[in-house]
Image 1 (tube, rainbow, N blue to C red):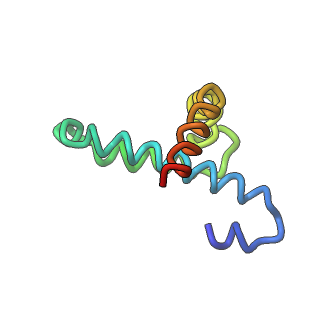
Image 2 (cartoon, rainbow, N blue to C red):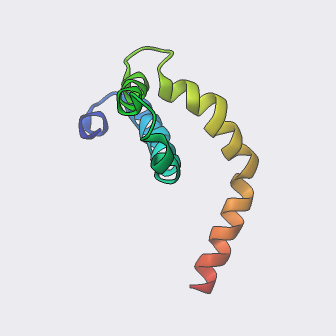
Length: 93
């Protein structure tokens, strides 16, 4: 990520930022479901494969697919509500 930020090309910045957004959502979801999922055989192998797919240097990598099809539509649908709530919290703080 540091190499992407420090490079002269900004295309790789978008790629890595997309990965970190997807990884953050995955980590939050996993924190709630990990107590059930770790019982499944090969859960950690599947998790590693999933994360490798998210980092793969191809156009159909997991980060791009998940961001474009799930995270971005949800964000665009609810971003005004989130901005209002955060605005209210900052004025109350």
